[in-house]
Length: 192
Image (cartoon, rainbow, N blue to C red):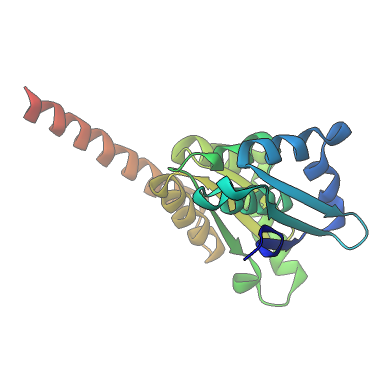
């Protein structure tokens, strides 16, 4: 087996290719360096090919980390937020909003505006409550964070997609945080 045939191809929308390349190739170089891989980017087709750099790459997860980072950037995350995926504790989760809006563009737009909130307030509050980074791009919502952070954010997003009020979602988030605080206090009591 040669290293030339170990690769992964991702189709990226052309408007996100520039973000993956970065100014003077800075983002591309950084991803290659951090993940120990080689990126081939075709600006005409939107194909991004991830290849192993050398034999040492076989033992690390660089190709998978690079895949997640590029996928995150292609779904609207900034490279800085996507680099959070380099941590083994972080994961990327995507939700296709068309599953909740159907084929109606009006319904999709309504769901997206509810998820963003007035002046981005709901999305920002959800990031603060959950600890996850959130991107709403095209017909996708993406989350980057730990399993617990993305699970909490996903529950909130699904509630909104299914028609729950913002008030109900905030109540669920506050209840979750209250339970976490009680668990921490309980842990401290057991340690004493």
